[in-house]
Image (cartoon, rainbow, N blue to C red; front, side):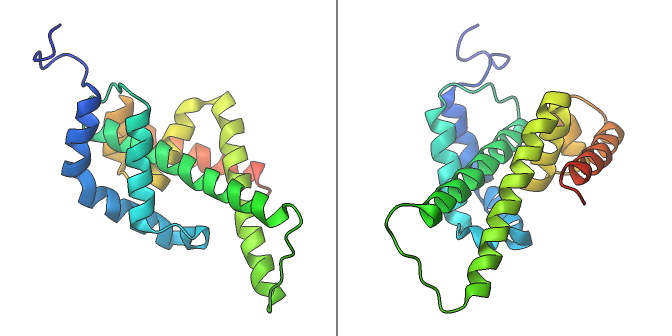
Length: 180
């Protein structure tokens, strides 16, 4: 297939083309994700969206079929960014000869538990991926990208009803893994 063929897989330039077109939506989604409990990561909306773009560009050629596939990939990338950030911050908190001093120890404890919770959810998703990778994709697209059931279904090639069932199953399994 030639590059001009509309049925050929998009090239890396498609990320460059889709990113500006969906930039406002990605910012809105990142803002909603950070506002709903992710603010303790110290990431801001722009940093998360821009880092996602850079990582997507570094990954080279992507087979992005449409808007939903782009947003699904962005959701996975944003999850990875948040997890990497939390891990780095946790390593810095534990590390070396640096003495950490805080005036309010309760504030430090609450930050630590939030980081631990993020990592626990990530570990649970990794375990869930071994059982059913599609459930993890549904969680990523719904939680990190804020996609609707119809959009997720389109990206995964299933019905919105299947997405709802997968979401409920994933929630129950994750709650069980996290001891909730």
